[in-house]
Amino acid sequence: MNVIVVGGGVAGMASAIALRRLGAEVTVYEAYAEPAGRVGSFLSLASNGLRVLRALGVLEQVRRAGFDVPRQRMWAGSGKLLGDVPRGRLGGDGLHSVTLMRGALVETLRTEALAAGAHLVTGERLVDAAATGTGVRAVFASGRTAEASLLVGADGIHSVTRTLLDPDAPVPAYAGLYSISGVSEGVPVEPGVFHMTFARNGAFLHLAAPDGRVWWSAQVASPGEPDLDRGDEAWLTHLAGLHRHERVPSAVLAATVTLHRPTPTHTLDPVTARHNDRMVLIGDADHPVGAGQGASMALEDALVLARSLGMETSVPAALAAYDAARSDRLARMARAAAGNRDSKTAGPLGRWARDLMMPVGIRFFYEKAMAWLYTYDCGELPAAPAGVLRD
Image 1 (cartoon, rainbow, N blue to C red):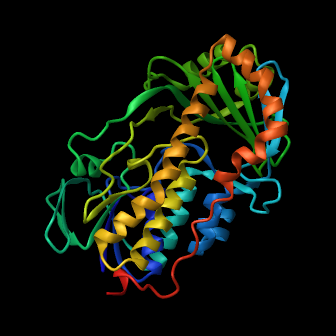
Image 2 (cartoon, helix red, strand yellow):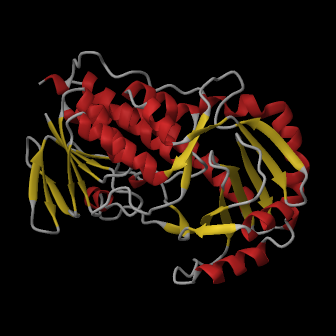
Image 3 (cartoon, helix red, strand yellow):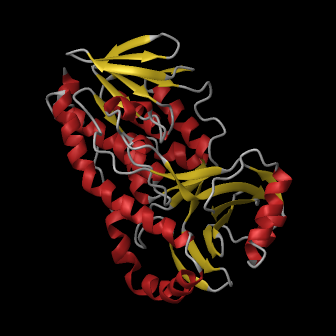
């Protein structure tokens, strides 16, 4: 069996690893010359995502590319501590959340995919795809074509695959929130703790990297999309004004030595056509969840898809099984992500209520409320595929 994977990000490279582990021939087509690129800043992997990496045999490689962050503290803009919880896990789970640059994660997964025997073709953008009866034929902007048994659309929130599956598929909409990140020096921050401050104009995240520098990200609530052409000094002046009432974010911003490009946050209405008999969506192409779970959910998708192909006796049956296995969890994750965004864009009354109730909720209900997310286990890859991948 051979598979076309469209998109060389987290979802695409993870699916390439999983499918190669089961013996499929895999070619990843990536639109950009450099798949890792300068896209995004740092991200965190929660325990559910780390279990997938362990099942794929790449957990230690990813850990070496990042660093463990055992704790998370949440703060009100006033400096009041709202909660201190395990980061991306429940208290008894020894899988500590790992934080790393998005590019480092993609590069690590890409290295492992190539070592497993996957092929990577860069500079090729998908423009069309159609079933051939026994497979699928893909057409790229360069005029290149490729045929395979299956096409996996891992081409992100602006997915071409999604519109090929359904011309009336939903399109991304700006969510009223954008992120701009950077690196600071000379600010004392306790290692091993992910700090989240609920500010007047969004949320401010920061943590200490192993080299002593501070990685930060300002998630800014704004009704309009950011001006991507604004210069670094103008951005820092703007952010300093937004966070002038918050002592720690102000200090971190004042010590900035590197600034990363701003990234608008988008929402996507529920996708109803996630697959046909020969094409399937995974990752942000289907569900841009955010809330610290984007990469972990993409990893889950990759493993569940590979397991379905390894257990079902036809590609259509495997894609239907994959969709059934993911639908409820992804719908619940979408609701959680919407609540997460709302907490960062709350008005004065909403902020007052949040700061009042959050300490109580975290103290008495946090572990129970988060168990569905962090204890989830996709399982292992079949030792010997009994499904369509056997053929």
